Image (cartoon, rainbow, N blue to C red; front, side, top):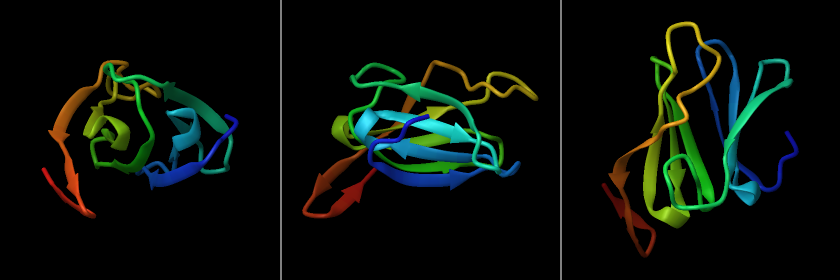
Length: 106
């Protein structure tokens, strides 16, 4: 869990913390005490890969949404199954984002 340019942060219902590690093109997950749990991603434009991830959010069902700015998309990562600590490795693009002078539309 060595961070390089951490940017976005989100906290799930259990208190676990998700951080977009923009410089390493990945997401890192920590427990509420700050202990490293897991990470995923890496540089690229395929599913589950990032090119400068910035924003991040977690919904009530445990899905993690990552704003992948360099690939102009938002990726969704869903829990593998009920009670699992892992997220599915497969991501799906849920929106294409176009930026023009600081404004976005989905």
